[in-house]
Image (tube, rainbow, N blue to C red; front, side, top):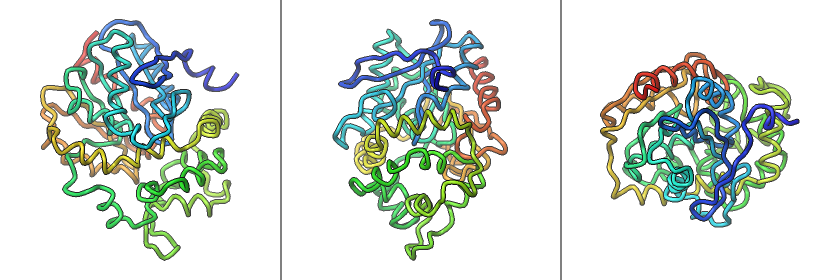
Length: 328
């Protein structure tokens, strides 16, 4: 049996919002459910430790493979991965489950989704937990332009705007790609250094992945069995959908012009990671200016993959907050 079968509840499927969403559910169907939204390049499997901890604590927990990922549908158009579709999937999943409101928990790109939920669907959100990803108000200009100017043309999010090449490079050897990404903090921190190709870009994952021999400097975070779950999923499903989330940054920015810039009346928890080179703790410092009910904690010694690097710390912080703000 694979680690997916041994470490996750049985998969369920819901035809919602024009796609099929695969999701994993655990715990008693009582109280306010907790929806765990993964990031890039991840899966619902990224939350395996939290699913068990929350269910063991008597909490109802739901973790979807979001559109484009894992066992869920993979639409063929870039626009099908904009923020309206991504948040719409979560609302439709609640409808499928007969749920009025949920607590949304998001890491990495999933964090962007859950922080947008109160702005786009405030009546469906009981609370928000951001893991690594802070709430940021709308940028003063197109975020892709800002990132290109600040980090260079080969910075991965800017590079992802190109058609076809990113998914071809990432999909060439998905086992190597996942070993490259799923490493401990020191290995990924090196990616913040300027590229050696003359572009001056930072976070130039294309060149770093190509140059990496797949072995040295590995500092692997996951077991071979866990890595195989990710490698197999992206080998079978490809990277078009996941990369297309990033190709909607400009569209999402345009969409946000008419949205609120604050979150009020909803309990929020922000968990930062001390050693995350991509989503640094400093990025969360302005959040009290934009969120009326916010509690913040830092996980010491963790890099970007916090719920997999320091699962007990994440579980403890989440459960403590849930027990105080949403007692059973």
